[in-house]
Image (tube, rainbow, N blue to C red; front, side, top):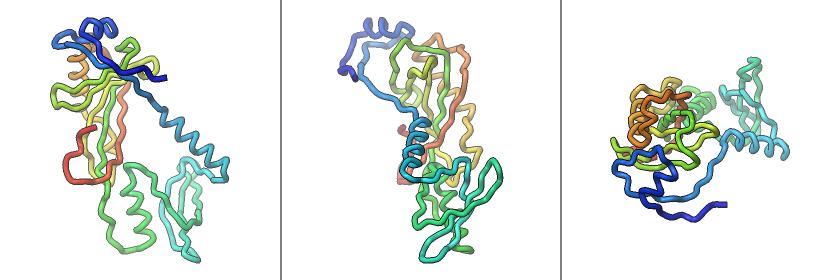
Length: 226
């Protein structure tokens, strides 16, 4: 059950989260939000699909496609664990490969139409980096704007730890493995903003660095606003 939103004065904000930097703090807004375990959701969707007749192939990559009879298509796959190859006949291909969508589309179209040019990318992927620390807050998530660039910055509960984020760096599509790796600059940015909000965290060691790529659809203008 979500609680009602509201505001508190400076003293109450510091009572709720005593480790907040008091300098410049005049008050805070309070609201409720929810979180989702994306990995468990993906598993739940897969199990539900299997219960309705779908055949699941995990750790299997699409390596090509070829025309089949009656307007159908054979999608060729390879099991990344055993190396075994298989062919799946279908009338419809759903490209749900996220930030790798342009690469998947080019590979499948290239095998269906040999010699044709690669299709123009439709994605503008954006990398986001997060740091995991020992718990930095009591029970609240902290959301504010970064001083250096005005972007949204947060420190939120993450199990028994705290998750600090996020960054926004545009990467080129089709995506490469290097594009998924966090940069030193991104980590320094997060640590500097964290130290401004929670000074005691300035020297705290990060337990982990998480990096993900958002499959944003290409459009005019800048990416960075997440």
